[in-house]
Image (tube, rainbow, N blue to C red; front, side, top):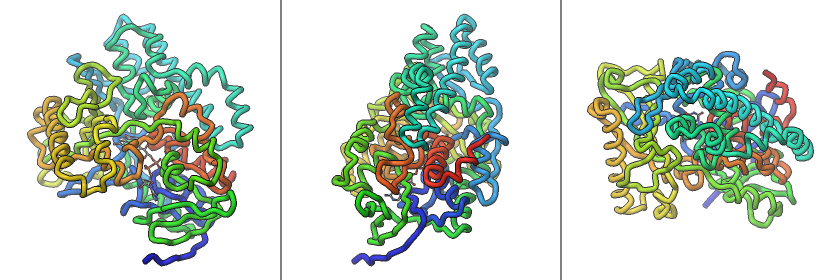
Amino acid sequence: MSTTKHEDWDAVVIGSGIGGMAAAAALSRVGHKVLLLEQHQTLGGLTHSFSRDGFTWDVGIHYLGGMAPGDRERELIDWLSETPIDFVSLGSIYDTIHIGSSEPLSLSRPYEAQEMDLRDRFPDQVEAIEAWTGALHEGREAMYKIFPTRAMPEIAGDMLDWWNRRAIAKWCARTTKEVIDDLTDDPELAAVLAAQWGDHGGQPSKASFAMHALISGWYLISGSWYPVGGSAAFAEHIIPTITNNGGEARAGTRVEGLMFEGDAVVGVRTEDGAEIRASVVISDIGARETVDTLLPEDRGHQDWIAEIRALPSSIAHFTLFLGFEGDIEAAGATKANHWIYPTGEVDALWTTAPDGAPPCMVASFGSLKNPAHDPGPQQKHMGQFLVWADWSTVRQWADLPAGARGADYADFKRRAEATLMAQFERAFPDLAKLVVYRDLATPLSTVSFTGHRKGAFYGLDVTPERVTSDALRAKTPFPGLFLAGQDVASPGIPGALWGGLLAAASVDPKVFPKFRA
Ligand SMILES: Cc1cc2nc3c(=O)[nH]c(=O)nc-3n(C[C@H](O)[C@H](O)[C@H](O)COP(=O)(O)OP(=O)(O)OC[C@H]3O[C@@H](n4cnc5c(N)ncnc54)[C@H](O)[C@@H]3O)c2cc1C
């Protein structure tokens, strides 16, 4: 039987992803007593790490933009952290693109360097490449015009959108594919320009180009970075800001629903029956998840709920976690990520699991990026082999709890793992010989560990409709209820960080001055 416990806080934040931690720490910094609740046993959301057999992997970070000294996002992270997190640059080359059987193309930063990488490979396409660089700059600026509206009253946000309507129509309302198709007929250049779409999960034919430009820009401006010690550093450094200012962070505490007084949200109910009161509740679990799992059906604001439900979920993914023993650099591993498109088609997801060949894969070697990693005498290293996938691959087991999905799911996983291992071996034959540990996570693992519906680790798909949606303001129509995290701003750590900060600023304007560069 559950025991009912009553508590009072200034604010309760649901979900300890970077968006939830940022919202909670920002409010703590300006004098609020905040309780952060996380369903998983480890704090950090997609920034958490896990270990098996002496290997440790980050679940949701391969590189970070916006973290160079002096970058706005880095300064905000420093403000939120009790002690500063150390970040290390991954060098000028951060991604290598493999399109079909063409020679791999390494992409560097800043914009000018990447333009030269492309001009060297596609000398007949100089005009298109220069226009692409210009579009990336303008698209990014257009996206930054939308961000502030997410923390503004509706009428002020609408006025700003109207003022910026030309830039929004040109860059936010068109897809990545539409912009590329206007620039070039060269299929290989078109594939290269779109290849990094996995950084936000919006397929080129569906994603708002401005979102692509925003996220590419984070890496292009000041390079790609990695937290020393791995992604768990975020929780290690940010949670103390909350607890040292009178707050608390509880792992293993699932919020089951919201408490209401009339129209207003006045607290949360947890799975164990506790009722926790607060005049502010911030949800970092995703806009759709908030609507579907925390809100009762009969509380009104059906237009807002319908608008959120009309926005589709992002892609899902499979990850093959790899443990190596040996000299992985000599065998071909690099700090740069590898984006592999064996057929040359980039606008595609894996729909033919478990046995069909995936159209798109990413290889990342986390231990090479982390200077605090000690490989020890056995030269232990970690890697991840990711595949962007459609939810339909695992839908048939979605209603069954983990551990009760039966022999056919076990067989599906075994065959999917074998398919991915064969693909890894084809791409990195020498590295494959050093693999001593492997484990596969499917989109159902994402659901179990994060609660993201349909395994949509990037939240809502970054379509033009989502990017321009009024429903994703941090302040919801329910008094006292706010949204944080990636759905408010953009997928990725910097975007989810902004989502958390916009939520905090919507609660207490004292946070706003911190946004100034
Ligand atoms: C494989 C992968 C690779 C990625 N690579 C990169 C990268 O290289 N660079 C980058 O910048 N970004 C990357 N990302 C994206 C980035 O990790 C996310 O965009 C970001 O972490 C999302 O943060 P968030 O706070 O919005 O949500 P989340 O981190 O998903 O946090 C939501 C939290 O809410 C909790 N929760 C859900 N329901 C409840 C409930 N009812 N009660 C209590 N708690 C609940 C969940 O357990 C979770 O901890 C990657 C993601 C993945 C999965």
